[in-house]
Length: 337
Image 1 (tube, rainbow, N blue to C red):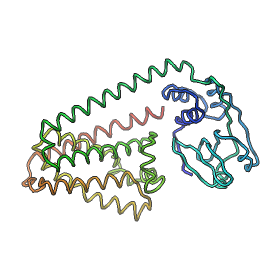
Image 2: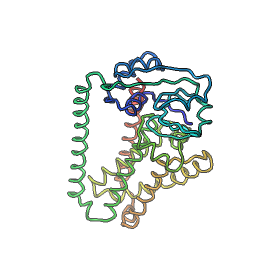
Image 3: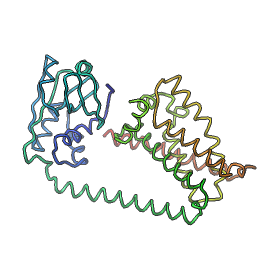
């Protein structure tokens, strides 16, 4: 069982499995206002939603099979939401991720404390209609922003002739994929829960991404997270591709300079960490796919001799990386509070 630190999603996950209407922002704000993050504190919070709850301590851990899920159980790794119990296994939610472990293994980490809840027929969040309306408009703003960005990228894609070459079409798609993978890695490094990131990370090895991101090797010179470096690389590359067609050869050369890192990353995961970070492997694969696109597209042979454009592109990467590195602690502190 892995240890999970973000307690904010506990209340939203629990309300969801109980079938109680809620809004995420309000629920998380109420959790943040709780002076003590205990089972008793959660029981008082649940009362606001019309969900009476009772806490119990079971000295005989085998009696857990007599309880009716869902319920919250306290373990050495933190609170979990037990959703199903069979004779030989336990299924639970932790940070929105469903896991199933043998019953005896779960009993070893469970301390015997549980919180059982009994939602009333009309259980719901206080002022749910008002909060849901606000939440809808907040989400609508995000979709409008996303739509505007997509239209702008599409416009640049057409106007600057990116669509005229198969290689640059593929490069655009790979850069977008790289941005997505590194965005998930950035969220992972900030301990921001993302169900998509958890699912992707579990493909090669459950918990592998978290383990790799906790190592010293996850930072470049001990200052910049590799997730930040990757996000800066793919985002600057995409914008340069769409805005400045004359810079395509220098993008190819910058990509070539990144390839040695891919060998080191795979070697480190295989022989030093003995863990596989699926998102990291996806990033390495993206870099190699970009190389093949630049190479067969003929862009590499146009990169020599070097010019100031190459160094200007390097400064663009560095500037975005430094800016992102400066913003990351602010986001992390905001998330903690």
